[in-house]
Amino acid sequence: LTPKKLAKTRILVTAGPTQEEIDPVRFISNHSSGKMGYAIARQARLRGAEVTLVTGPCAIVPPYGVEVVRVQSAAAMREAVLARLETTDVVIKAAAVADYRPKARAGQKVKKVAEELAIELEKNPDILGEVGRLKGKQLLVGFAAETDDLVANAKAKLARKNLDLIVANDVSQEGAGFNVDTNIAKLLFADGRIEDVPLTGKQELAGIILDRVEQLRKAG
Ligand code: PMT
Image (cartoon, rainbow, N blue to C red; front, side, top):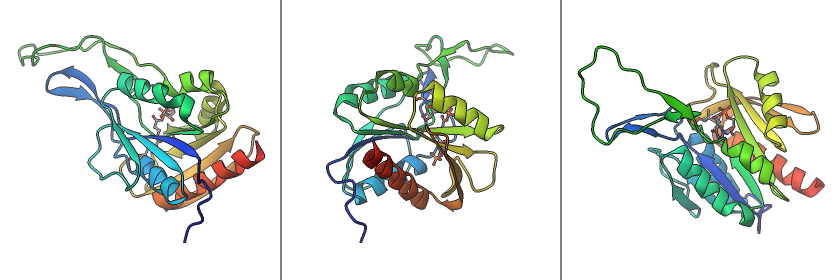
């Protein structure tokens, strides 16, 4: 039986992709299935935490016993996260938020007339960056999905977004990242420590991340 080590801890987890609408039938998104974030929500619940799962559109079933907040766009995810920040102890951002959205959403389905079609994009808000700026006592865990320079890029995100821990996954590696049941990660801590987690199930990785969260909370 898993000891209830996170009892009375309020954990907000984000998961899945965001979808940025082009018109009523099309959107820009990515390959996130939600498996990583849902695994964290499930393991946190099993450890006794009060869990809120803010999730983009996913085909998988949310874990039992967690509050589920469904959103579509990055803007909606931002609102859902910020509205709950004050009543949260730990924020874990596993969602793959779209970095850009169409500048304008067409009210009607875009017709197949032009030979070439350009869609102008504008930057989405960086939710994790904003939470990093606003954070008080909350512990903040981010993810970094990289295809090159894993450690250097993750280190830069850890510092820029004011995180306590970042889970870096090289999504170009077989068995890691998007839409698989396993992952390969490096955990980078604010004090400079780096922990390697070789290929393992996402449920197991979720457990390791939560063990570290618990240790950081005890130390802080
Ligand atoms: O869902 P799965 O199929 O299981 O796949 C898991 C995963 C690959 C999605 C997951 O392991 C992962 O890496 N999630 C983060 C994906 C990502 O968007 O990484 P990033 O390096 O672009 O972003 C860095 C961090 O900032 C992330 O915590 C992200 O949630 C956050 N972010 C990014 C952009 C943005 N506009 N707002 C954010 O909050």
